[in-house]
Length: 175
Image (cartoon, rainbow, N blue to C red; front, side, top):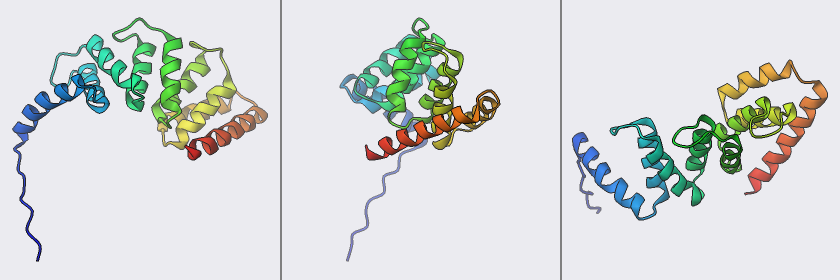
């Protein structure tokens, strides 16, 4: 005979109160997921006044703990100059860390940096590599960029980029 588990019912309006109390407390105590959540809330103005500086602060704390999503968002904030001075080299640094964990958006961002020579030397092979990897992780934007780039790069260079992508994926799957 099994006991029926009690049902916990929380009204939708109570979730806001719980989240508003719990997430900042956890974030202040070093919880990376909560820090990322607060970064997202402030970056997008979700229930609070949009504040890029506050978002940057929370994403930085989470990213320093290795938070993939926070690293991606930091890269994005450096790329766009949101809450911090625009710095493509820093965007590259943070996107690289998130990309190493298979983050599709970060891989796409690296492709854009290489395609346009922002913070790195312009390199069509590297751009194709990162768009290809982002596409592997199901980015529709990467598919479009691959199509555009394939008309501007030789088949030999595409094969080089594809081989690099296969090597990258082989290493990624070992992790």
